[in-house]
Amino acid sequence: MKIVAVIPARYASTRFPAKLMQDLGGKTVIRRTYEAAVNTNLFDDVFVVTDSELLFNEIVSHGGKAIMSLKNHESGSDRIAEAVTNLDVDIVVNVQGDEPFIDSDSLEKLLEIFKNDTNKEVDLASLMREITDTTDIQNPNNVKVIVDQNNVALYFSRSVIPYPREENVGVRYMQHIGIYAFRKQALLDFYSLPMKSLEASEKLEQLRYLEYGKRIKMVETTHVSIGIDTPEDLEKARKMI
Image 1 (cartoon, rainbow, N blue to C red):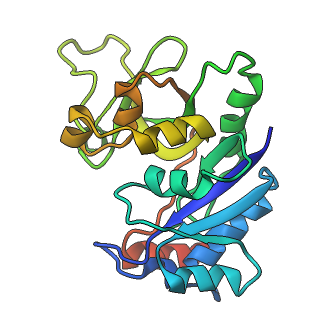
Image 2: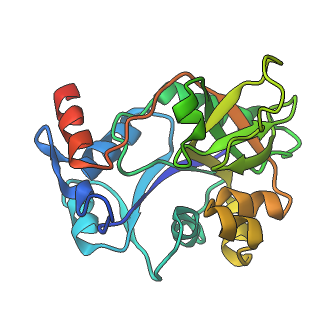
């Protein structure tokens, strides 16, 4: 089973323009992320896929591998799907370009799902963690997921799900962490299928997979991902480095 990591990288960012080219301990954020993915030793290959010549050159000039997007894309899945269309690969892992502190234990758990899925029933695997603070639960920027007894995703939402009509019944609120491992065919299907109403309403690309009947296996983790979305986040990351 051939496994690759793909890091979708856009130069433009609404909240923090050019964040991937910011200095983080003597290297750019995107280079830190690329090298962290390589150093997990979990992948047969690692690529950055981007629409920016600046980001492309940043990776290639330091001995890394990068792919230029041929089209403009609305989602990371679209960008990755185009990049892997002609690659000989079985499993594709989406690594976020603005998260240089990669948790290899969580990624390994995602890959174990596919190694143990002999009947190829799982199309995607992704991560979730429990949240208990009411503010976090109600925050629409924290995407919630509910799963069945086998940890297969039933629905993702920016709303509070499940709604707490009855309290003290043991409901756990799970936040989705947007790191995915895909079967290549699931990605290609996503790329060719039109957006439907649930995805359009919630602005969550994972709902397209559910609307078309794909199975998303969720893996629980306690790792808190550290993304660089603001200049303040960058300062925190510099202190960690």
